Amino acid sequence: MKAPKLKVAYILTPITFGGAEKVSLNFLRSVNRNRFDIRPILLVRPWETELYFGQELRQLGYDYETVPVAMKTNGDPMRVMRVAQKLHDFLKKGAFDLVHTHGYFADICGQFAARLLGINGLSTCHGFIATDLKLRMYNLLDKYALRLCKIIIAVSEGIKIELIDSGVREFRISVIANAVSLPYEAAELAAHRELKRCILGLKPDDFVVGYLGRLSSEKGLGYLIEAAKELLDEEIKVKLLFIGDGPEREALEQQAKAKGLADNVTFAGFQTDPESWYPALDIFALPSLTEGTPLALLESMASAVPVIASAVGGVPKIVTDGVNGLLIPPGNSREIKEKIQLLAQNSDLCGRLGRAGGEHIRENYSIGAWCRAIENCYCRV
Image (cartoon, rainbow, N blue to C red; front, side, top):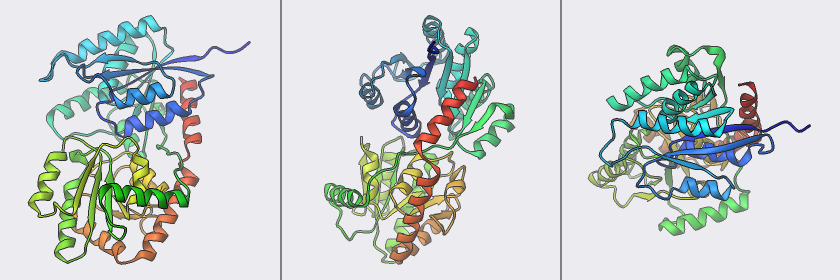
């Protein structure tokens, strides 16, 4: 007799299309749908009628539900209680076996609703960002909500330690680093490099340092702009390319303009095919102040792009300094400048680091093994 499928409510808040959303799509694309019946539930702002994440879900053949997060654009102090109640009602009707949440708001609302109904909970914890008082308060609530979960997937050892320090029992935590699909063959990489540079008006011989992802304060992107200024002051010509959007975009644009870098910095905005942009780069830079297991870092290395990254969170687990990339201390524009200069003046080192990075990702961060590990967590709950 065929075993019944495990019915999973998969809850997240796709306000922007960042790491958690890409991780979710990778999983939903690869999960064994003969064993697991997954229903995505998106916590959305009601004035956002069409989300890119929702479009991607439909292309994958998923029906999904939406729950409005805020009733008005200027804030809604009762939204946690209201969203938790709506999730409670939906979960009760759906007869779910498991609730899987991503992100602090989904954790708080989803795991409390699941506990009230006696449904087992699982969360993927990507880390904690505390850039203001509101986020610090949400982090406290999140860490309490995570204690309600049967299993927490931490995307790095550092996050596991932080969870234990916050009171989560160690036996409930499984460390499963993010993974990526392998991108293009060598000929395809060259074609994408030429095409994307042409689209942006970049010359074939421009030395391009890029970042792909959310433009937010914890990413430390202001230090990258400072480093570019120092390089140009020494007549080392570089171009910066930012792919993505976020709350810090306007401030970063103003910083670049104030530094006289308007002609050397390109903000390309959100792109629906970010993976195809990595080949346009000579270096991928990740000057983050905090990280889990950054998906953009894995993707850039998989595309054989040499990387410079802050030694925070799970990054040192991925990048071995001088072997498959270069590590820098966080919050240090001088170190960023020196590492960019080193690579800009040494094409052989660029090539060696890029090839080593690509090989490391192929051997250690495959989607298949990662997806099976998450499925095993589902079966353990």
